[in-house]
Image 1: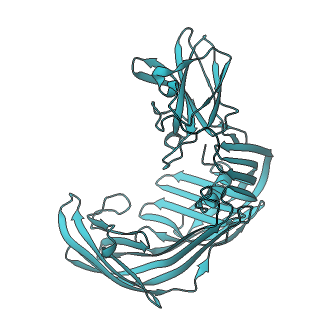
Image 2: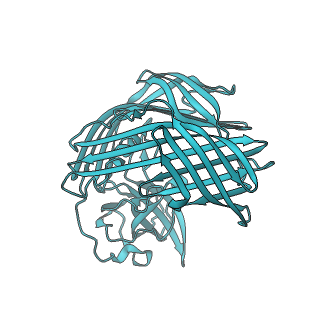
Length: 474
């Protein structure tokens, strides 16, 4: 499943905020309360950056010091240290803010012990607390409340024989989630999004904006000589199907120097609306998208500016409906015989097979290398089949499967598999995609081809899609 489909993002975040979605039949509640602090500055040529966070069930802190000529944008820190020991991460709330008392081990780039580093800091509440917009209501009857209390202050950091006075920022964060319909979730929403990327000479820049029922989001980034500017989570602007305007507060890398970016663009409709269906083992999402052609510009306070157009940006409107239900289907049992390539089942051209991948091992036996998204595409819970080439193109099609599929075709020489082709999704034009894989490869007469078909393995995930696989070869 490609990640360019912006409509998926808001829904994924929304569903991800609902712990225990299908785990219980009674009201469940999740709470977290923690303090986060970050301190950074350039002091006498040294760049110093550290952060610490502590909650009810976790605590961690780390620091880095870059001494000239080390560059914090490209080089490892000259000195560094970290800890996950709660007793070393002293973050204490007060009536007016928070106090900090950290103790961290310090090492050089070779891992040599340099003693202990310490930070003491005092932060006060900066402005009034604010609450994230709640997610839209659906049949799930969930309530999610996220409250931020910004903090600001100063700290004294001592490491490797040097003391630094640093500005510090942070926040006290409270999250409360409750829900009482854990076996299903239904959500419908509309929105608009734009994603842009530029690479010119020594500069890379990005801009994105997203508006749907869950809220409004904007972001900008600039990497240029001496500058790495990224958003601090503060912006103003507006967005609809006709235009977008944005003013975004940024910071320059580790130093905390304030910067800003502004964007303005109008949208024109392109082509006709296109409907895509995303099917996973317990999620069904229908998205109707309309491509937009943006015209405008993005400008940074450093003087760099970039043209917002169809060459650098993808924009769309969308209507999305998501149904999430409790997983159903066969229980995990013995692994099927064709869970590995040596057990591949031979299929004739024109053949169709239906099989369950639930009991297969997670890891793919042969990694994929030629799928369109590269490192972002991977597969797991795979089954293996073979067919004999006839000298003509052959199509392997997973349409009709009840999960997001990925398929690859190989030739085999002993224990070596040579990837002939791989496909995750089928892109529509000018927008949208099918999340079932359809792959056509050229074949040679009387050559045996191996097919590995499985589920999409999400980046940073510990599992892949699985379920009923429908595979045709023709």
